[in-house]
Length: 140
Image (cartoon, rainbow, N blue to C red):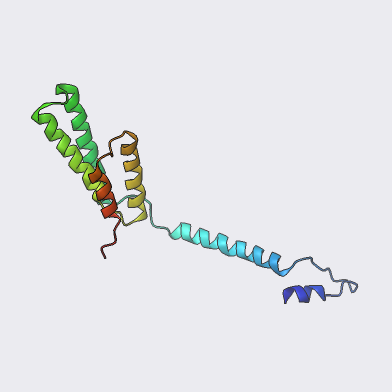
């Protein structure tokens, strides 16, 4: 309809005609809608920071991992002290794997942290995979 209106404007009477068509008009107005929508979403978006519970789990694993490394440096990889440090670190890592990340901040932080652990070759037990898969199942 806009195209028909523009095509029928008399150019010889001093009116300037435009070569705009329906597709151009829709594309230009669509760009404006997308731009304003993206801006509104960005302004109203919730923070991407992890929640307190996941942050505490990550800090607990970091502490357990540091304690394990200290144990290995001091006494090596044998004995009851080493076994206890291994279990504590493994339990802390399993807690992160099993954590059901609901918010975007939690999902991003959990994924980033576990990718770091995996890059060190330490996310290798079948229990890790099972806990990760269970944490993604909807239980609502």
